[in-house]
Length: 397
Image 1: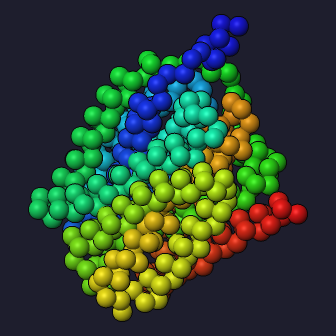
Image 2: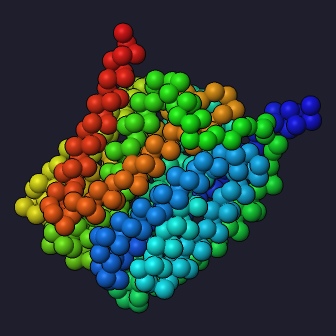
Image 3: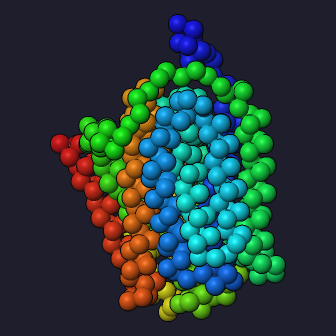
């Protein structure tokens, strides 16, 4: 009875929670970006970057299994603080700059990537009414783009002027500051939530398959997530190797794309709210990222600098802008009190894309170059958009 009263107590202020969860995602994104944007200066090849990403997202797939349960036990803000610790540990390993150190960094970062979205969804899902979730969740999802923009703008110059290890050290300082902030906010949002069962792999599959709409979201998120991680991880290397850009120029172009992605996460949230159809927005994003990937892969080296920047901006708007609407739609489809579990279940599929895409790129790039890899990923994104269209058509019948 006491626990029930606690769970139904008046909600704590919304915007400090949104700021904290946005900062958490920005921190994790910054850490994931770091090796990719310093790669030319650090001498990292596509195979090493792919191994780093695969390690991070493989562990994140595993950690997402207990992310929702951990949130139920210790609360969203404590999970956020633990994610900051994992970022510190991962970037500390990256300081050694060896291949095995980078692999270890990826494994540690996976412990932060898996739980951070269920933690945010559980906290914000409790504080935000359903009709406002698309907008608020889109604001929170701008954290990924904030981290990406900061990483693209600041880390390449730090790596060039100082050393790659200095870029990793800067991320460690950010993680330490974030840890202190999360712990300071934690008491204000501490509740005793109702106990939830831990979901294993087959439980997650049953949860997803029980709702055709959620199943379509899960399937479409696989290629969408894969496209996003390759744009973020490999574009700087693609720009310097095949597009004729310098290291810093490639970072600036990627920052422009991620800035567009930040605006997209807000803009797509507004569009979804006005249209009252998250599916329509997700289809538009899927088609957009597919077209951009195909054009960049097939024609990128032939484009003028201004057209290349414009195309990359549209690419970022779509490939990095869809997540907020996606997470909000999961929260809307989830049963009351089960937002964290539903988010973790659907993200299991998303993480498969994050794991598979770097492996696919590592396999294809020696044979067809990074341009050919973008073409292949563009085709998979088009298939993801088709899945959402077919589900939408089925729902209308």
